[in-house]
Image (cartoon, rainbow, N blue to C red; front, side, top):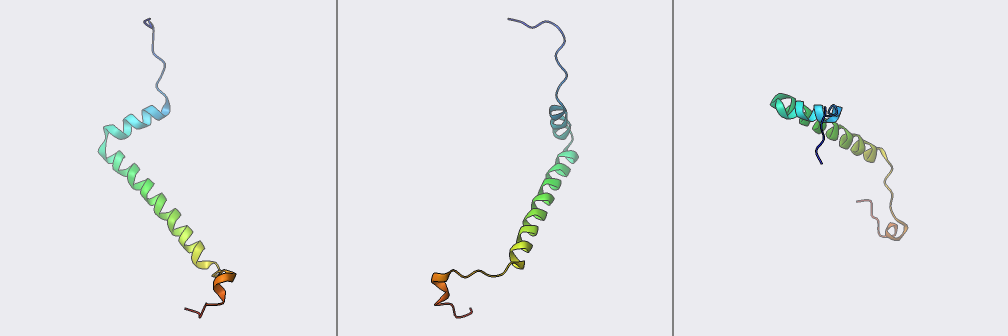
Length: 67
């Protein structure tokens, strides 16, 4: 069966993808932005981990010598 008539407008996501793939500067900028976001999230989690108190399990606490 063939469809006759105008096709529906492409979704905004399809337009964004076609714009990113058509211009390498936009593609590199998008990849750089995503990488920056990942780095910031990882750095935030590392900072959270360092600010927490060290937990020593009860079973290991007997042998803990403070190292």
